[in-house]
Length: 269
Image (tube, rainbow, N blue to C red; front, side):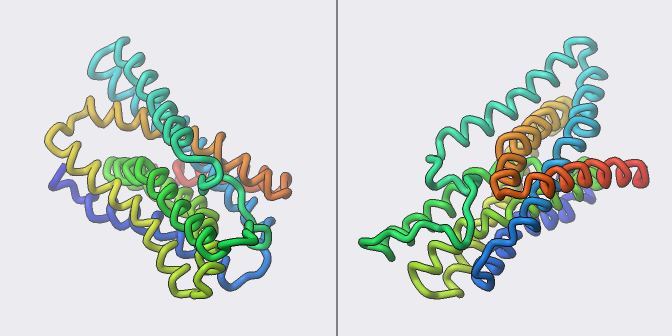
């Protein structure tokens, strides 16, 4: 694994995906109103890519690898890995309070502005959102990195999908910090830094898995990745896209994401 030629490329992909929070930060600072059509389209597209690649590519590879190693029992291992990924992400969602959860829908123009201790409360909200993003993005970083390490044609679309879904998270951090400090620079920096959780997750995952990496571990990790991606899509991305009030745009993005993902996988074979 250490000498895998995809290691550096996988880290770069994961870094770029995580730092997409900076795009959300820039949007929130520049714009006084959330472009709901664009965000709904982007979130729907991201969900389409994630679900299609998870079910058609990642989970199938998990089954193939584990079945080759353990026969019929390998199919059960892949299935358990898949639902373990779902359970892990669900537990993280439960741990993070909904008020500070970056996946709870937030618009630039409707962020809460407390009447008393306004600056302190807004700063707290922004910092807690940054922490929540870090918690959520940690397993996403591991997922992006391992997928790209094993197969770049799978890692690239996953990185793009993660990057798109990180944009609203950047808004969740930057808006309250900007209103609290009146500093565009601080809002951008905090939001940008929060995205570093993904490459950190990739690095820790790399160091943990390095001594034990084998076909079996790859199969189990791929099953978990598929579960993580599916949970993110159905619990966070699609509901968030629809909550922006642009239902048709979110569905259009979803179908477009699946279509482009399916075509790209065929072209890259």
